[in-house]
Image (cartoon, rainbow, N blue to C red; front, side, top):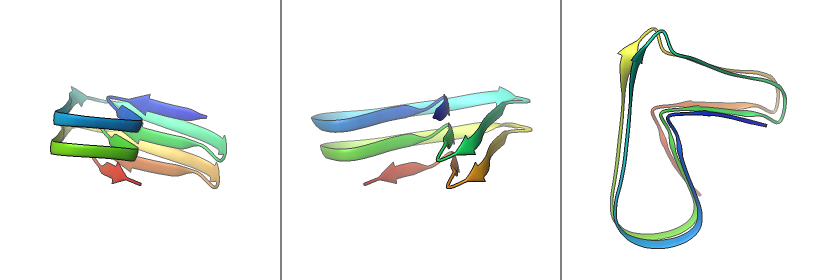
Length: 83
């Protein structure tokens, strides 16, 4: 399972240009519970991406909570993940 909030997911893409992701707010909660889950809040995930350009990722706010509870879970907040 995936809990994505304010997240850009790219897979198997070739592109030129910009990826811009802006996440703002108050009292934002994003939760993934169980086994092998992922909770992404204000995140850019790129897998097998050939890119010429820029990635801009801005996450701002008050009381931001991103939680992954369980076994083998991942939580990312305001990050850029490239695989």
